[in-house]
Amino acid sequence: MALTPGRYEGWADLADACHWSGQEAKALDACSRAIRLARSELQVNARNPTARARIAVCLARAGDAAGARGEIGQALALTQKDPRVLYDAAIVASLAKKKQESVDWVGRAVEAGCGIEQIRREPQFADLRNDPDFDRALRRKPSRKP
Image (tube, rainbow, N blue to C red):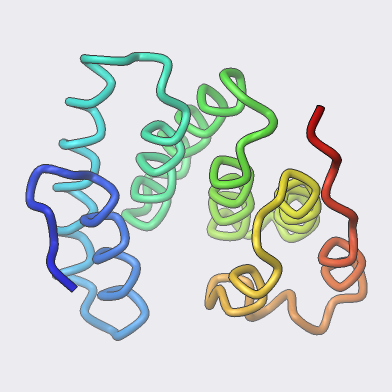
């Protein structure tokens, strides 16, 4: 898979992959690039909730919990229906060790149409997999679109 150098999404995904493969220095570098590129995107469209949500995840991975909460709060203020933003809210909550909040966001992401298998395979949610609340969140029904 080729990485598009000017796109924050690929750098954020690379940061995740590096983190889960134990390459923390590379993960932090990729997070920094993703944040910088996403912030450039926000210069063009300040109302891009996906960019804000990805910044939030990268900030959380880099240990900036307050910055992550601020960015995810801004993303959620822009949309409560985007499955990716809700999924990222669950990740940010999980990284902050807010288990129930993470489970709640997972349920909302499922309702918004986020793929259940994607959630099941997310390494960040490994500690939730045996939680009955997590299982109930995954069984929530996607809402019907008008």
